[in-house]
Image 1 (cartoon, helix red, strand yellow):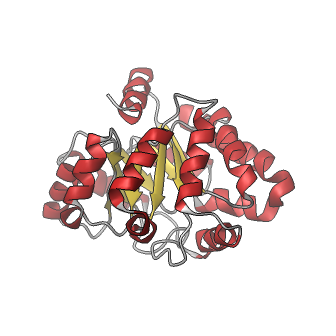
Image 2: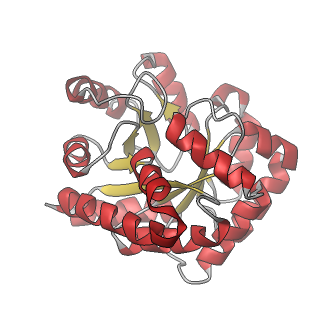
Length: 265
Protein backbone atom coordinates (compact mmCIF):
# COMPACT_ATOMS: atom_id res chain seq x y z
CA UNK A 1 0.00 0.00 0.00
CA UNK A 2 1.40 3.37 -1.03
CA UNK A 3 1.75 6.33 1.32
CA UNK A 4 -1.20 7.98 -0.42
CA UNK A 5 -3.41 4.91 -0.02
CA UNK A 6 -2.34 4.54 3.61
CA UNK A 7 -3.12 8.17 4.35
CA UNK A 8 -6.62 7.97 2.89
CA UNK A 9 -7.26 4.69 4.71
CA UNK A 10 -6.26 6.28 8.02
CA UNK A 11 -8.43 9.32 7.35
CA UNK A 12 -11.45 7.12 6.58
CA UNK A 13 -11.04 5.37 9.92
CA UNK A 14 -10.96 8.77 11.61
CA UNK A 15 -13.97 10.03 9.58
CA UNK A 16 -11.86 12.92 8.35
CA UNK A 17 -11.26 14.46 4.95
CA UNK A 18 -7.88 15.08 3.35
CA UNK A 19 -6.44 18.56 3.04
CA UNK A 20 -4.11 18.80 0.04
CA UNK A 21 -2.34 22.16 -0.34
CA UNK A 22 -0.36 23.10 -3.44
CA UNK A 23 2.74 25.28 -3.61
CA UNK A 24 5.14 25.91 -6.48
CA UNK A 25 8.65 24.62 -5.83
CA UNK A 26 11.17 27.45 -5.75
CA UNK A 27 8.66 30.20 -5.00
CA UNK A 28 9.28 32.72 -3.52
CA UNK A 29 12.88 31.50 -3.19
CA UNK A 30 14.20 27.91 -3.40
CA UNK A 31 15.50 27.83 0.16
CA UNK A 32 11.94 28.28 1.50
CA UNK A 33 10.31 25.36 -0.32
CA UNK A 34 11.11 22.71 2.28
CA UNK A 35 10.23 25.01 5.22
CA UNK A 36 6.92 25.78 3.51
CA UNK A 37 6.24 22.06 3.05
CA UNK A 38 6.95 21.46 6.73
CA UNK A 39 4.74 24.38 7.76
CA UNK A 40 1.86 23.01 5.71
CA UNK A 41 2.15 19.65 7.44
CA UNK A 42 2.36 21.27 10.87
CA UNK A 43 -0.80 23.25 10.06
CA UNK A 44 -2.73 20.11 9.17
CA UNK A 45 -2.00 19.12 5.57
CA UNK A 46 -2.44 15.42 4.81
CA UNK A 47 -0.85 15.28 1.34
CA UNK A 48 1.35 17.87 -0.36
CA UNK A 49 1.17 18.84 -4.02
CA UNK A 50 4.44 20.38 -5.14
CA UNK A 51 4.28 22.24 -8.42
CA UNK A 52 7.07 21.84 -10.96
CA UNK A 53 7.65 25.30 -12.51
CA UNK A 54 7.06 25.50 -16.25
CA UNK A 55 7.06 28.42 -18.67
CA UNK A 56 3.65 27.63 -20.23
CA UNK A 57 1.35 26.31 -17.48
CA UNK A 58 -1.80 26.07 -19.57
CA UNK A 59 -4.18 25.01 -16.79
CA UNK A 60 -3.07 27.68 -14.34
CA UNK A 61 -4.34 31.19 -13.85
CA UNK A 62 -2.27 34.35 -13.35
CA UNK A 63 -1.44 33.70 -9.69
CA UNK A 64 0.21 30.32 -10.23
CA UNK A 65 1.69 31.50 -13.53
CA UNK A 66 3.52 34.24 -11.66
CA UNK A 67 4.77 31.75 -9.09
CA UNK A 68 6.19 29.59 -11.87
CA UNK A 69 7.85 32.62 -13.41
CA UNK A 70 9.46 33.51 -10.09
CA UNK A 71 10.68 29.95 -9.59
CA UNK A 72 12.12 29.77 -13.11
CA UNK A 73 13.82 33.13 -12.58
CA UNK A 74 15.38 31.52 -9.49
CA UNK A 75 16.78 28.81 -11.76
CA UNK A 76 14.65 25.96 -10.40
CA UNK A 77 14.63 22.84 -12.58
CA UNK A 78 12.83 19.50 -12.35
CA UNK A 79 15.98 18.01 -10.86
CA UNK A 80 15.96 20.71 -8.19
CA UNK A 81 12.34 19.92 -7.33
CA UNK A 82 13.19 16.24 -6.85
CA UNK A 83 16.08 17.33 -4.63
CA UNK A 84 13.65 19.37 -2.51
CA UNK A 85 11.51 16.28 -1.95
CA UNK A 86 14.63 14.37 -0.91
CA UNK A 87 15.48 17.12 1.59
CA UNK A 88 11.92 17.09 2.94
CA UNK A 89 12.09 13.31 3.40
CA UNK A 90 15.08 13.73 5.73
CA UNK A 91 12.66 14.96 8.40
CA UNK A 92 9.28 13.61 7.23
CA UNK A 93 8.99 10.01 6.06
CA UNK A 94 5.20 9.84 6.34
CA UNK A 95 3.51 12.72 4.49
CA UNK A 96 2.70 11.82 0.88
CA UNK A 97 4.16 14.17 -1.74
CA UNK A 98 2.71 14.54 -5.23
CA UNK A 99 4.54 16.37 -8.01
CA UNK A 100 2.22 18.34 -10.29
CA UNK A 101 3.31 19.83 -13.56
CA UNK A 102 3.54 19.46 -17.31
CA UNK A 103 5.00 17.01 -19.78
CA UNK A 104 7.79 19.14 -21.22
CA UNK A 105 10.25 19.01 -18.28
CA UNK A 106 9.62 15.28 -17.90
CA UNK A 107 10.18 14.64 -21.60
CA UNK A 108 13.38 16.68 -21.45
CA UNK A 109 14.68 14.59 -18.55
CA UNK A 110 13.27 11.34 -19.89
CA UNK A 111 10.29 9.60 -18.32
CA UNK A 112 12.21 6.59 -17.01
CA UNK A 113 15.00 8.71 -15.54
CA UNK A 114 12.48 11.07 -13.96
CA UNK A 115 10.48 8.29 -12.32
CA UNK A 116 13.60 6.56 -11.04
CA UNK A 117 14.87 9.78 -9.46
CA UNK A 118 11.43 10.66 -8.09
CA UNK A 119 11.01 7.24 -6.49
CA UNK A 120 14.46 7.43 -4.91
CA UNK A 121 13.66 10.88 -3.49
CA UNK A 122 10.38 9.70 -1.96
CA UNK A 123 7.78 11.07 -4.40
CA UNK A 124 4.45 9.27 -3.97
CA UNK A 125 2.39 10.51 -6.89
CA UNK A 126 2.59 12.52 -10.08
CA UNK A 127 0.05 14.67 -11.91
CA UNK A 128 1.06 15.55 -15.45
CA UNK A 129 -1.63 17.94 -16.62
CA UNK A 130 -1.07 17.41 -20.35
CA UNK A 131 -0.63 13.61 -20.25
CA UNK A 132 -4.03 12.18 -21.22
CA UNK A 133 -4.26 8.57 -20.05
CA UNK A 134 -4.54 7.11 -23.54
CA UNK A 135 -1.21 8.71 -24.48
CA UNK A 136 0.57 7.86 -21.24
CA UNK A 137 0.11 4.10 -20.91
CA UNK A 138 3.85 3.37 -20.80
CA UNK A 139 4.51 6.21 -18.36
CA UNK A 140 1.61 5.11 -16.16
CA UNK A 141 2.78 1.49 -16.05
CA UNK A 142 6.34 2.52 -15.27
CA UNK A 143 5.18 4.90 -12.53
CA UNK A 144 3.15 2.16 -10.87
CA UNK A 145 6.09 -0.23 -11.11
CA UNK A 146 8.16 2.36 -9.21
CA UNK A 147 5.51 2.69 -6.50
CA UNK A 148 4.39 6.10 -7.76
CA UNK A 149 0.66 6.79 -8.20
CA UNK A 150 -0.25 8.39 -11.55
CA UNK A 151 -3.08 10.82 -10.78
CA UNK A 152 -5.30 12.09 -13.57
CA UNK A 153 -7.67 15.02 -13.91
CA UNK A 154 -11.40 15.00 -14.56
CA UNK A 155 -13.50 18.03 -15.42
CA UNK A 156 -17.15 19.15 -15.48
CA UNK A 157 -17.11 18.37 -19.20
CA UNK A 158 -15.84 14.78 -18.78
CA UNK A 159 -18.22 12.24 -20.31
CA UNK A 160 -19.19 9.02 -18.50
CA UNK A 161 -16.93 7.12 -20.89
CA UNK A 162 -14.03 9.45 -20.13
CA UNK A 163 -14.59 9.10 -16.41
CA UNK A 164 -14.40 5.31 -16.73
CA UNK A 165 -11.18 5.55 -18.75
CA UNK A 166 -9.49 7.88 -16.28
CA UNK A 167 -10.65 5.79 -13.33
CA UNK A 168 -9.04 2.69 -14.85
CA UNK A 169 -5.74 4.44 -15.56
CA UNK A 170 -5.24 6.36 -12.34
CA UNK A 171 -4.32 5.42 -8.80
CA UNK A 172 -3.90 7.20 -5.49
CA UNK A 173 -6.85 9.54 -5.99
CA UNK A 174 -8.78 11.22 -8.78
CA UNK A 175 -8.44 14.98 -9.11
CA UNK A 176 -11.72 16.63 -10.09
CA UNK A 177 -11.24 20.08 -11.60
CA UNK A 178 -14.37 21.80 -10.39
CA UNK A 179 -14.31 24.74 -12.82
CA UNK A 180 -14.42 25.23 -16.57
CA UNK A 181 -11.33 27.39 -16.68
CA UNK A 182 -7.93 27.89 -15.11
CA UNK A 183 -6.90 27.83 -11.45
CA UNK A 184 -8.26 30.65 -9.35
CA UNK A 185 -10.61 31.77 -12.12
CA UNK A 186 -14.08 31.68 -10.57
CA UNK A 187 -16.30 30.70 -7.69
CA UNK A 188 -17.48 27.15 -7.18
CA UNK A 189 -20.94 25.98 -8.22
CA UNK A 190 -21.68 23.71 -5.27
CA UNK A 191 -24.93 22.45 -6.79
CA UNK A 192 -23.16 21.27 -9.91
CA UNK A 193 -20.40 19.74 -7.80
CA UNK A 194 -22.92 17.83 -5.69
CA UNK A 195 -24.47 16.45 -8.86
CA UNK A 196 -21.14 15.39 -10.38
CA UNK A 197 -19.45 13.63 -7.46
CA UNK A 198 -21.93 10.70 -7.37
CA UNK A 199 -21.22 10.07 -11.06
CA UNK A 200 -17.52 9.86 -10.30
CA UNK A 201 -18.11 7.56 -7.35
CA UNK A 202 -20.09 5.17 -9.52
CA UNK A 203 -17.00 4.72 -11.72
CA UNK A 204 -14.25 4.29 -9.14
CA UNK A 205 -13.36 3.32 -5.59
CA UNK A 206 -10.47 5.78 -5.60
CA UNK A 207 -10.76 8.79 -3.29
CA UNK A 208 -11.95 11.93 -5.05
CA UNK A 209 -10.14 15.21 -4.50
CA UNK A 210 -11.64 18.49 -5.65
CA UNK A 211 -9.55 21.49 -6.63
CA UNK A 212 -9.75 24.85 -8.45
CA UNK A 213 -11.85 27.58 -6.84
CA UNK A 214 -11.45 26.66 -3.15
CA UNK A 215 -10.29 29.77 -1.37
CA UNK A 216 -11.21 29.66 2.32
CA UNK A 217 -12.43 27.57 5.22
CA UNK A 218 -16.09 27.91 4.25
CA UNK A 219 -15.67 26.72 0.66
CA UNK A 220 -13.30 23.95 1.79
CA UNK A 221 -15.82 22.65 4.31
CA UNK A 222 -18.64 22.62 1.75
CA UNK A 223 -16.50 20.65 -0.69
CA UNK A 224 -15.46 18.23 2.04
CA UNK A 225 -19.10 17.38 2.69
CA UNK A 226 -19.23 15.55 -0.65
CA UNK A 227 -15.60 14.82 -1.61
CA UNK A 228 -12.78 12.89 0.04
CA UNK A 229 -10.14 15.61 -0.30
CA UNK A 230 -9.89 19.35 -0.74
CA UNK A 231 -7.11 20.77 -2.89
CA UNK A 232 -6.19 24.42 -2.42
CA UNK A 233 -3.50 26.20 -4.41
CA UNK A 234 -4.02 29.70 -5.79
CA UNK A 235 -5.02 31.17 -2.44
CA UNK A 236 -1.86 29.80 -0.83
CA UNK A 237 0.28 31.21 -3.65
CA UNK A 238 -1.42 34.59 -3.20
CA UNK A 239 -0.44 34.61 0.47
CA UNK A 240 3.15 33.73 -0.41
CA UNK A 241 3.24 36.44 -3.07
CA UNK A 242 1.95 39.19 -0.79
CA UNK A 243 3.92 38.11 2.28
CA UNK A 244 7.28 37.91 0.56
CA UNK A 245 10.12 35.61 1.64
CA UNK A 246 10.41 36.99 5.17
CA UNK A 247 6.82 36.20 6.17
CA UNK A 248 5.71 33.53 3.70
CA UNK A 249 6.04 30.54 6.04
CA UNK A 250 4.10 32.18 8.87
CA UNK A 251 1.35 33.42 6.56
CA UNK A 252 0.87 30.01 4.98
CA UNK A 253 0.61 28.38 8.39
CA UNK A 254 -1.96 31.00 9.45
CA UNK A 255 -4.04 30.34 6.32
CA UNK A 256 -4.06 26.55 6.52
CA UNK A 257 -4.81 26.21 10.23
CA UNK A 258 -8.43 27.50 10.06
CA UNK A 259 -9.11 25.45 6.92
CA UNK A 260 -7.98 22.30 8.73
CA UNK A 261 -10.20 23.22 11.66
CA UNK A 262 -13.18 23.75 9.37
CA UNK A 263 -12.70 20.34 7.76
CA UNK A 264 -12.57 18.67 11.16
CA UNK A 265 -15.51 20.57 12.64
